[in-house]
Length: 295
Image 1 (cartoon, rainbow, N blue to C red):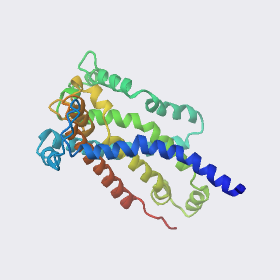
Image 2 (cartoon, rainbow, N blue to C red):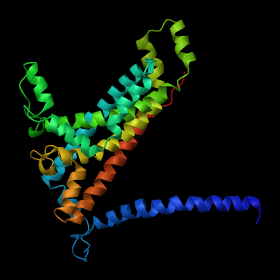
Image 3 (cartoon, helix red, strand yellow):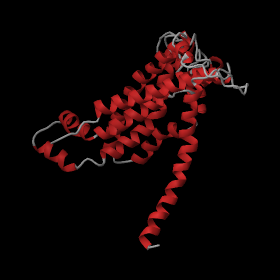
Image 4 (tube, one colour):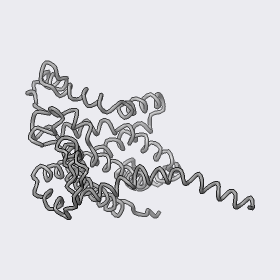
């Protein structure tokens, strides 16, 4: 065997390890879930009876499932634009700071590297009624009535969105800062010489050149919000996604169906539907946002 053939063979051997891991840990469970969505398996019984599309027909008649879909889409619609806009603004400000830049970066990254369960319980405490809740105490100082936050059907979901945005800010700020530092300064200097102000530089140079970063963050953050679970489970009463299912996302619905109701067929059906929603939203975002910029 020649040296070149040995190198190729070695490369395939090393590549086979992650490929095997992907097939066993990712691909096989995905195919198995798809198969389970056509059965009535109850997790305890060894029998998995094939029932065709019955789970798909019944799940769309379930009001809780439909509520969970709407809630999940609300998390994405409110959360993704908020985290991208706020993190872009913060990264633009941080990019101009020359002193203690590392300290400020660490300050914003801290929530992202903190365990999400701990963050959820701290925010749950902050949303409590006076005299326990920090936010309501602050509102009272300014003469504003205390708010129910997590106990309200209209305020609970936005309260969890705020927590999730706060957690993900650090990650997005770091990615945006890395993107800002790749923009050639010649473009900025040439625009200033031509008389462009800061707003024109931002909209006509900075943001178009950050388009790949924006597409990447829009997709990853959409997936993050579509799979939201830990915050809702820890911040709502008994991890129920309440009050009155007003904060329940699809992942929590799947968890409750699988491990509390032991209805694995319905849980697998909801998983397949969530997978389809993630695929569609990702493709739509790539088609809309991933445009070539020419100068």
